[in-house]
Each structure stands twice: as structure tokens, then as C-alpha cells.
Image (tube, rainbow, N blue to C red):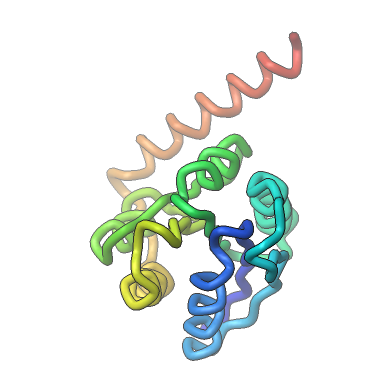
Amino acid sequence: MTKHYAVACDHAGVHLKQTLIAELEALGHTYTDFGTNDPKLDDVGSDYADQVCTAILNGEAERGILVCGTGVGISIRANRYPGIRAAMVFAEFGAEAAMSHNNANIICFGERQVTAKIAARCLKVYDQTEYEGGRHDKRNDAMDRLLISTTQKEQAA
């Protein structure tokens, strides 16, 4: 089944993003690339995370891929959105669990932390894994309630 992905990176993730886009194409998926394509740009990764999260929340994409130098900053930003579960992965097992246990709708990578070959394998595993539900629903629902509750408190302040 063809999926549509929202993809983005900051300047430190350009090369890995290109590898991951090639993997998406090999898997037969479509994507929207929100940038950047310039490794010399002095940019802010959160701007790209915002675009990917918005695309997913608006139903314009089913899943997302975010890349920065470490994967940390861009995943922290994405996880501030209620309804987003962004998982930073380094190995195939983590990619599988991100989807099967956590129903992650965004997978995050650090170009300086994972090889292109491993990241492409992780993406393939993530893409081909389905959410198991069941015992995982309780934990995921609790995470969503906490985030929504925290967001509502912040908005009221």
C-alpha cells in the first residue's frame, strides 16, 4: 500500500534525508519534501519539524521523517505537538518498536549518529511495521492525555 510521507531536515541532515527519500521511492511511496536541501544554510530545525507535524495533523501525510545532526532537537520539537509521536531511532529493533508498540507517526534520525545504510534499513522496517495496539493502547493513551493536559494548561496561562 502506498503511503504519503512528509520529510524534512535542517542543514545537518541534508545528505541522510536524500538517502531516505531514495528509500521511500524504492518502497513505492510518495512524499512532500519540506527542505532544506542546503547543507550550508544557517537554519533552525524546529521550523522543519513544524512543517512535517502540521502536514501529518492536517491529513496531508500519513507518516513523517525528520533529520538533524543528532536527531535529538528535531524529535523534541515534534513531540510538543498533541497527536504526534516522534521516535528517534538508531537500529532496526527501535524502528520496529517505534511503530508496533508506540504507533509513532514520525521517525527521526541524526545524520551524525547513524550511517545512511542503517537509517535506510530502519526506515524500511518502520514502514513495513503495523501498530499492534492491545496492551500498548493504555500507555499511548496515557501519553496523549498528559500532553493534551499540559498543552491546555500552557494555553490557559
